[in-house]
Image (cartoon, rainbow, N blue to C red; front, side):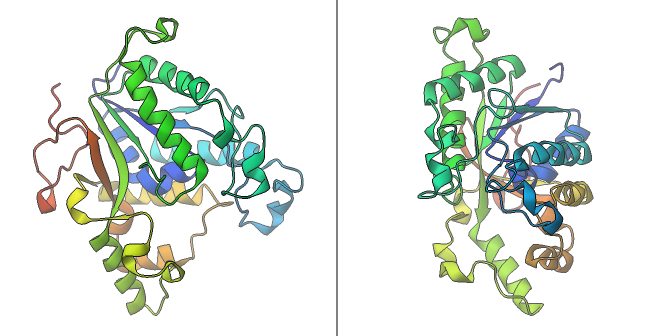
Length: 297
């Protein structure tokens, strides 16, 4: 990594990165930032939305994970991201499925991984890449998926361990990450989206979850520190989402919403700052508009 600014994103499955951070990644690539994606599993347990590929499912040929590697590569090509890695190498950790399912009991499930071992793999990446900024999920993994929770644990512990000169010097020189962000969805933004969908005659995809405040990944507006405006790269995010056809359909409620609100729904992404100092508020609502805000160089 020779770029002066470097960003590391830690995600659970292929497609999580595009949904949460696709526009942000495209913007920073375009600005010359070194962007590294670290994905923890191949997403073997994902639901397959392409009928002719149904035989790849975990209960059939069990080849979905390999297929999703190629989906991820196509998506990252659309965003311009070249440094794409898997924790411990491709296939080292398996998609854990949801709590209480047989997949969650699989001996290679990421949920059952030796945490110290997984953290060491992540520390090696942190010390090699030397990112000033790391992005991952909150402690609930956004919505409670075991792999998202485990990715959070691995990322947060790796940030701490990577800065300790006494921890595994064989993995490289110690490196201190300056800022850590968690992906976030402000309450007001989701409310606006649900209202916009209602105006289109579309039902909320979250109506079975109860009231707005009951939706697990919604956070109060005041905890959101940064809103990255990457609307200029919304088309790249759209292309990256289309590169994950087994997991993302482009004719569902999300795209009805994106058509109604234009590029904003695709191109503005939100973050909570959980480590490091908040930078200047150059964006709307007194938020940062740059994950590197306040950093020198």
